[in-house]
Length: 178
Image 1 (tube, rainbow, N blue to C red):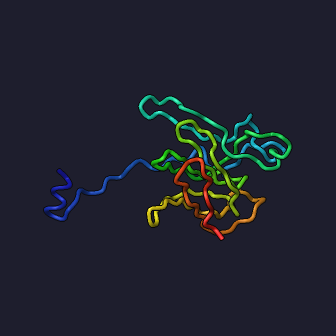
Image 2 (spheres, rainbow, N blue to C red):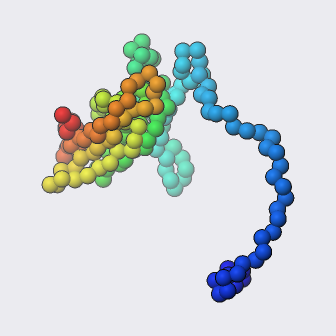
Image 3 (cartoon, helix red, strand yellow):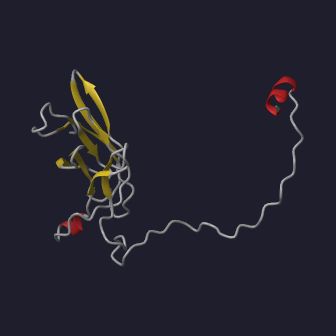
């Protein structure tokens, strides 16, 4: 084979010419979101979802709107979902943590089996990152980078916010952020 010949002799096959490149018929001019005049997605909500899929069957186990626009929620328009950046983590106890919703700046915990919202808190900036989990002296924590940057109307920053995971699901998570 050509690879073995090259390794043995250091000589490779002569370069062959290829057909000349044809002029491109199409080109990319940039990404533009399809938005309505108010700046919201110009399709029916939900505009972002969190989904659980059975990997054996490919079927949805549950699907819920994920994230909200605070100004729409204030007028009673909830369940819209928003674009989101980042993914979740799931703990051994079945808690799903995610902070990827771009506009509401919330960090949430869900029951991984049902999609039920168990807890949420506001972050100083959007948590456009996948959380991490760690343990100190037998106590589990989750941490998320909150930096924003995807919403042109909001300020950006750069902090890590950590929460102690309760021993019992009925107890609230405790922020370890000053």
